[in-house]
Image 1: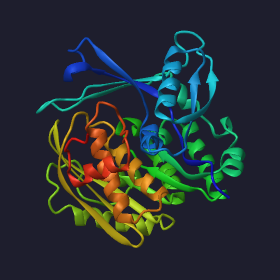
Image 2: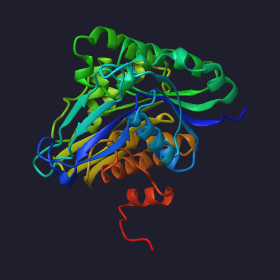
Image 3: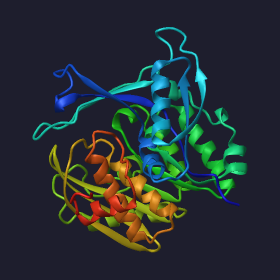
Length: 353
């Protein structure tokens, strides 16, 4: 049976406001606003390239911020379903605000999360007709993120319900670990259990060097260092341990990033798929806004998998869409076509007329 959706995700949508002209938060007095979430950042690559995608979420009823988010998802070609939750006064439900600057040169970017009362924390599996979505309509891949899974006990349970429906109907499960220390504080044992259960059911596991270690408790290289030299083998050893611990997964990927300064990174990735290793060696990329680079990588990787490409092409495409996300002020990559992505991979930035 053909499946209606290439990608389905569960997500809590919010807005990001960023000072213009690369100013730090608190100094600039003009801000640019965009609708964003880690999960829809991933979907954006496939949506931009013509595949059918769907975000499962919640909205604040009659909110102008909700209307803005819906309009932006429609503009990006991402479908959505979600309950409408009454705001119930000024201290009630709302969409999160993510306040973040881009950094510049030696000044790194800073992110301030303002998520009190976030409507998405109450998302539950019962919000959605899972038999229709995964049974009658169908999806090729269910994509989940650790950011959503860690929001609340309800969202963690929703992930497990979605996985159950997906696996019962032949849908692959993708899990981007996305560990955040601020989400885990005081909840380490509970979230380790939830993340482990999701990872045990996943077909595709992605993250960076910190994610595999801190979210799943795997031994690996020291996280956060400036030097990537000699670390590729250590990353492969770490993923080797992940393969033993999570044998259901057939695909493991990790991004590699060395921050030279806010505007120059060395960007690479490794992938285990089809029983073999594939490496995109770190090379310099220019960075306009780093937020969403990892999501862009996962988006390109999943697009390649959906298209049935060889593993090396999936990796190269993901590397390039991650670099593209870092080269825009948006939190996501919006490729015009596949050729544009392959030009990025080839290092060809010549004008096309």
